[in-house]
Image (tube, rainbow, N blue to C red; front, side):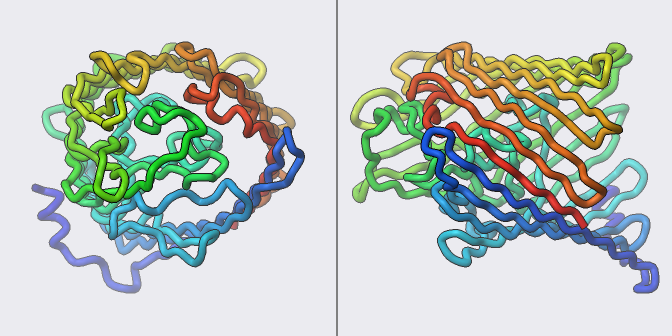
Length: 415
């Protein structure tokens, strides 16, 4: 309430306004290792502006201009809510608002209105409690950072009370996870993501029904001793759809669900340990069979990880995640066990960075290996090169992309 009351005060006079801006351009080129064809080129230009009116008020705007050639594509826009849908400039170009916020801060209280993201997890890329936002999945896991959150229009209040840091969020934006378009390089093939339809079999006509219910969340965090604890509840449409039959094909619908979760994080010398756990009592799921039947089941998620600063400028991140859904006749395995391992080293005064990432499913035995090398030429220019190598069965989380091995090169320019 204090944050809302504080926002009633007018911003400062024009002579105290400070404007900052930056620009990042990223050009990515990729070549298929199996066929040797340069079938992917993508350009991203991301301008960022922030305006400080005074100590309390500020506005932030970040845009994303994207263009691509080849078969990888820019992903579907059908899963976006009407208020967030990108401006399409053609089949291979679009403009999207990544952030558009007005925020007010006083001491430890903050209120943020507008298009924003809500990062509530502590693990790196494993989504256990971090399930408020929609996520870009148009390139599966073959991105530099995961998850790639999609911002949504909403409101967020952060404040301290009785030694607890409270974070309350509400979004009336129906945007859900963004998949690749059918036929794109990273369009899903595994039956588990296609309501049980086998890999290679055509899908019927699909129509996305974006939800119109709000997503609400509350998180409380507290530091006890040398550890940080948090507990949270998220209620709203799931970002993962269920398939339902319709008179003109099949609809993808995003049913309501509630997630209750907790996180723990602590430092111990050169190591940072992280744990997350969550329970969804009413997870919408598809069942096996030709009728596209659906049900709600209990879903349990848990993950643990460690960040470790090793000697000689080595950094290691290792994680293990478990995703279990109760019951029988599911189109997915009851339990998925996912492991991630990343090791990297900077050298030559941190101008060079070498990394290797191994992602795998201990349930299916598939995975991907992603070595990369980057060079920071100067404050503005960064060059990167790497490989994405995949193995496994076409029904697996990673193995469904086993024919997409590629070598890639990226140029990043910052102003």
